[in-house]
Amino acid sequence: MDRQLDEFHQEAGEVGIPDPREAHAPHAQHPSAKEYVRIGIVLAALTGLEVWLSYSGIAGGVLIALLLSAAFLKFVLVVLWFMHLKFDDRRYSRFFVMGFAGAATLYLVVLMTFGVFLDS
Image (cartoon, rainbow, N blue to C red; front, side, top):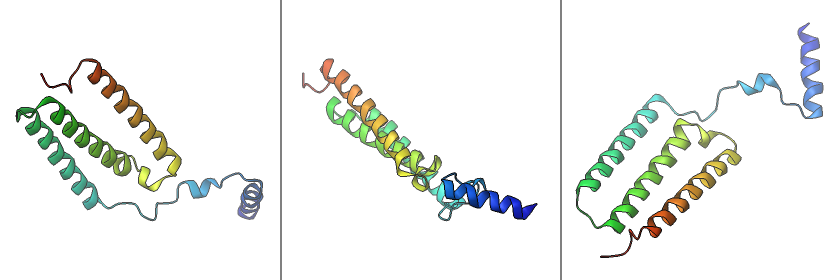
């Protein structure tokens, strides 16, 4: 029975069907728990920085640029490590980058419409 199953998987692989046994193989470069904790600490520090920036009294345009930069960095860290895109196919990463670029563009257009970047 195992021999027939192995032959079936070999024939399926020749036709281009992925082997389901390989789909559950562990990632070779999977991060350790220490790395997740480090990234969590960095994310907490970035969140603290964002809160501090919002109360710092920095001018509107500069404040928004700094907050967007911190948000982008947090987005990248979460997507790459916690969603495991660093270890998956690059096409998935492109979808997230395109989504973020679209959202950031829309946000900037709305901010420019309200004149946030103009000095009063």
